[in-house]
Image (cartoon, rainbow, N blue to C red; front, side, top):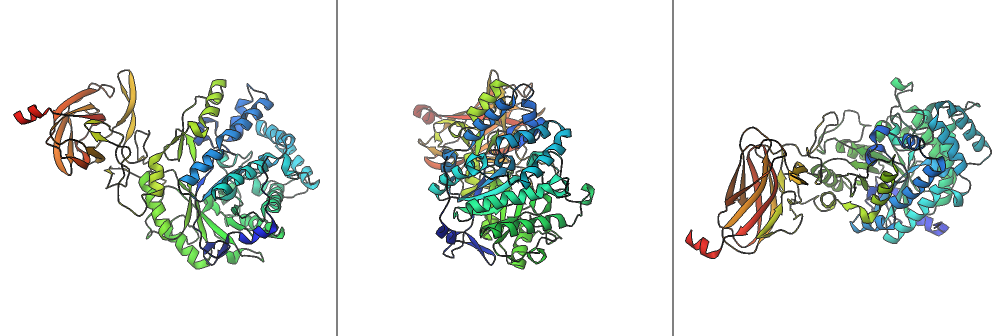
Length: 601
């Protein structure tokens, strides 16, 4: 076990708020750009591809139908030990990020025996009162979170801090699954009864889950209060559903009370870390949570959070409610009005074009952000892709999962990394891979870059959560508007560009080694009833046209052959334009025509 308990002198180097900025111990502004470590200490079903099982607790309950409780616990120990390791953190640092956000489940701070009582309540609703009574008993006897050496949650934090400190990465501690559950969505918080954090009372009429939450943050503050590589405390992730429809006040008064308790309790431990608040509605709405509304004495070092998904990146578009801050216009205005730092604690789950536009707009405003997420199963929007593993309910599936989550078996999504770290602020494209002519070009190896420079597609991002827009109708490999999907070509399954509509195009950076005309072959299919047509251009000059006749079905592929115009030596852009829709393209192959044949023509 690695322990990182810093000396008191290091507490002077904590990040702090200076007006509307976050600064280090020397007063230099720090823009936190990070990655979420979701799926590690708390599973969310969509990232694990167990959607029908929903929350982590339900996954465990399903596993316990064929496994003993100790076997399930052993599997999860192996899972957590393999999901994030030093190799993952080294990789994140090497990409240029300067922080990670750690989503935590409170049950990892319980003892093994205490966790078993909670899991009985997960298995049987009638056991919930007994669990609540047990929590109250442990709370009164000071038996909660009391021995860090024996609790998994502290061990994982300590290990992570060691890896991050070696890479000069900050850590944001995020209580993602709060005692009782902070919202109605079990997938996010692994709650037993929705919104019980705000409602459940014990036999003494106490809001016992809130008392336990305060106690946990007290213990965390005592342990890490002087650790300079902890950037801030994200005390409650994404509270939501706090409205009249769920028998709550609807004005955030419940959150105002608990946040005030948490801030006061943390400060009482001598802890001056930044404390981040998350508003109602998945972290974004701050009515009665602004600094002037918080009934606390010490209002220093507060940070306000936004979670940005499926919304516009246009900085001129705002929300009529000034306390709803997921839109960039409102985020900037809120920061200016209250002179507090703001931070986008989660953003992502969108196309590369959207990711770049969001990062660029936030960078220009000196607002930090944290990409969600580091890895996920069959993930095209994450930094790392975990290969599908089968079913978590079978021994084979679990074995595959434990193997596939390891860093060495994950595949980096180079286009996502490029969109986040290189593309903001530039229109320059970058080759996805080295392409040389003569040679073969996989259709899916088009350049990395923004819509309008590396490709053009009719739908390339999602900016309205209410719309079902899909930017990649194929759902595989790349994360742009170009529709990449699996193609079944006879007995082979490969990737192809498909769902092409008129006016779309995509480009490749190619190094032409020899000048002259080429024989070009193209592996194609036609999804439509009418002929499709593709035009190829080099340096914006037409070099070849492909007329793709209708095929009998989407699984029928053919190889077309044509002659190109003369191609010049050097590095050039090769673009494929969709003149008539319907084609599917697997690859292009270029072979130089023999010199005698060229002369004869």
